[in-house]
Amino acid sequence: MATPHHDSARPLPEELPAQGVPDEPTRVPLAIEDWLTVIVMSLLALITFANVLVRYLTSQSFAWTEEISVFLMMVLALVAGSASVARNRQIRIEFFADGGSTARSRTLARFGALTVSVMFLLLAALSTRIVWDHWSYEETSPGIGVPQWWYSIWLPVMSVAIAARAFGLFLRRGRQP
Image (tube, rainbow, N blue to C red; front, side, top):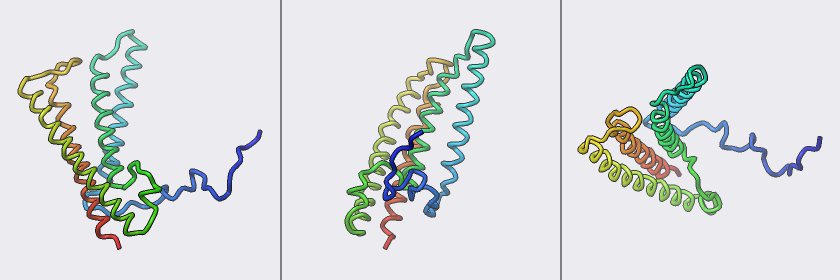
């Protein structure tokens, strides 16, 4: 069996520097996002497994599982976004972000962190209006009939958390030599 050609100058994925690099110290521990990810993924797996098992045994399914799963996937995406911002691992064009002088890289990193913070603060403000509408019009979820704001409240909350993580990154990058 032939192996693909490997240029020895290019690192293999397991040799990339991002892996195994310790996290920067932060005021709010990054373990919060890590544990939330574990909890949400576990809940998703349990709910999905229970639904598959019940569907297999009874030819019926739990009506609430899809609604809860969609909510948990939204929470998971926001928690992962928060962890990504706090660890400075969000998507960027490395040619611009890491190229050039150290001062230029730091300036671009601070600008990126500040724009992420502003964007998520705007998202928090706009989504707060959605939560208010859900609450004031007493909307209920289509699957199980609980108040819709129980689900929508987490978008502004997590958006503020991501904005805070981005602002923390902005401050940390400002303190770097």
